[in-house]
Image (cartoon, helix red, strand yellow):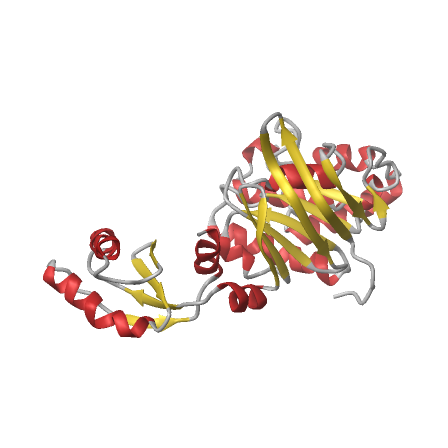
Length: 314
């Protein structure tokens, strides 16, 4: 990552109100040059509102934000050519081909024909779209459409790339490929600001901010957030019936028979969080076997960022 001393993005007291509803509440963060900064939270938590204020698309009710050392105060004329934006909704033209979309966006960025041709070729090679230039955009799968959106956003070689839920609705393999493309951008010196509600994607970020109901609830590197926010241990259970296991253990938790902090479902697995959680393992086994459920394997694991996020929300 870059050693530049000034933040690429800096927010102070950033607030947005809609009548009596506060969508973003005194949010503060810095994004370092040359890093992937993840802005994470569930749908409706304030992620998109924050990114829109950062881009100058929406005025804050209070607070300030700077991008590349310049205040975002309504006039983004100097900032706009230096940033790229990929919106939450697919925004390219379905009736145009891959090449036609890139040509259209390149001209919108003011690229001359000679520069445009070389930039398009670079983008096609970067995204793996070579050979699909004449394919209508509507005929691309979700993963390929996201690659095309990214290609359009980087044609003018922005210093900062803003991505709002870029992998929403995309299959896991395509998501992994997309993140590989983001790392290639960072390797070339681009700063990436990405919003997402996928906690597994948070592990790919250099630093993170968790937002919930408009407020930041955690901020730092994944390791720092785990260390500071996760006070308990995680016992991972692989029972014969995960849904029934959740119901039984939560009932025991509510009655006081099982004094643990969290019981959460992770696919076919169950996570139980508590300080010294191993001391509760015999009681958990007794509860499950008494209900005719095989507890399966039970191991203490390193907490995931999803464990941390759930713990931070309480």
